[in-house]
Length: 416
Image 1 (tube, rainbow, N blue to C red):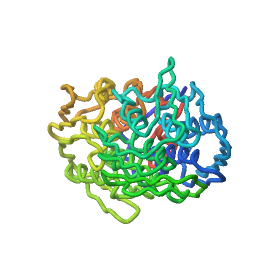
Image 2: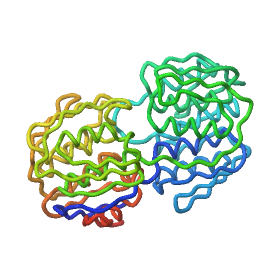
Image 3: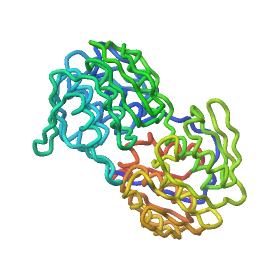
């Protein structure tokens, strides 16, 4: 357990290099369970979710070595039952079900945990597996899936679920025949998984579009792969520059992946210099209010919604932010209100009347992205704030306090 002490009103500046994408690295680690041999992943973020997933893979029989952003995985035989405690601590661990079903014909996976940000049912995953010939039973807190061999199917999702797209795509790599996923999620991380699987010998095409086609193969080998940059981390630090009235550059970024955010902050008055692998941002003298709705990629990412709301407290006028993805993602707003934010919640919409004079207080992070938003709010506040619940932030941001210090922020970690 740890907390941050944040002294606000310090203008941030400089350069920050973006780490590998959390939501890609975790799934590439899982995808390795489909293959045989030694894998090397580069640009892997040193965050607690990656360490948790490493624990899951070790329990399933993989050898995992991780240091300085480089992960080496060796996979030979694997087990089909996941460690319950680890799975319950992180939602992404449910992604092992597809690879285990494909490889072993069965899997016992605990119902996953993760951030409490709203309803995230697994019915889309499970219905897809059933269409491919699996039987799904619930035994206490465990999902038990069985299929002597999965077969191809034509599957249409009722919603473009990222997790279900990834899970079914991985399961289909060794299923008999062709699988087509319609209304698939289009996130950049899914393209990353497709490229990794294909290097292993899979036959997947269409990632990044609403239709993905997978032709099953008998077996998969190993591959080396660099993880794409984390678009949510990139967005968070870009917003940190703006909320402090600063300027700076985010490096090792794919600007196309954060295009929705760049459009919003440009409309708010930020000056942007977009290069092939970097974005420089300069704060305006006066931020304008914004109107944003979240949505599946290429829409505005729900994982940047709390951080954008924090920025909107410093904008002139009434900003409106509508959350269309998760139904309980506004829990952090009461914490921002403690700082002095003028926020009104109306069902799925937030109205922010700014700019607000924020004052440092004691805050508690309830989930990963909420924690990032509270740190941003504290950076803009007069005086010192205490942000508790840093273990949530550590799930997705590597050494956030050190990176903010390198940009001129006064953020200190206190272990409890």
